[in-house]
Length: 210
Image 1 (tube, rainbow, N blue to C red):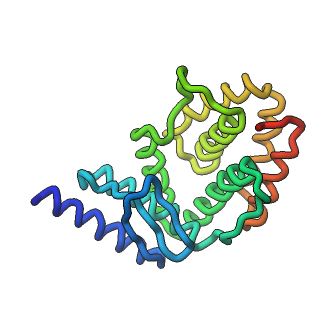
Image 2 (cartoon, helix red, strand yellow; image 1 turned 90 degrees about the horizontal axis):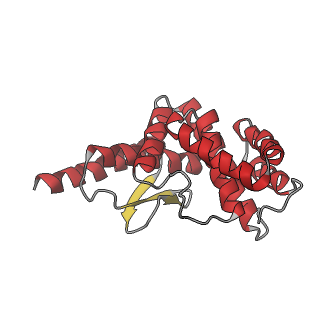
Image 3 (cartoon, helix red, strand yellow; image 1 turned 180 degrees about the horizontal axis):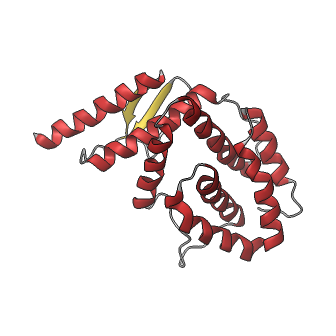
């Protein structure tokens, strides 16, 4: 009974947090959080109803609510998978910074979510027995590096360094520095269109990442 009560409390708190951000929260059998712009869909993390689950759900709701508030839901990738992935990376940085400026405490929720995802292995360092595609290496290096630097999610610092080292081994130090110099602009962009434009700029760097 106690376990079930904790589950229900977890769902209730997530729902109340969603209302605070002005969105509807729905739980389902999905692997990751997602949003349509009006409804946030969350995975059934409440298998234990633990405090760690609750902290992670706070951050997931905050992140998806930021998309609902700040993202224009359109695809400017023209079918290019890497551009779409880079677009998502840059947009995530933009909207989390924007949310933190409006809602005090949001930065902490987002930090705790990143930490929880790292503990669960969803955000992870490069694995020695794993083969990664070059584009995947680039995107992971940017995800970790930009979150560490601009969102101050220092729980990712070590992994960010490892992914960047791997990216430099694959692409060379000069190119990776050029890409990060472009990607750092994600902390100053103000629209979804600008995130898309930045993704295309990175793609035009003098090297095929695919």
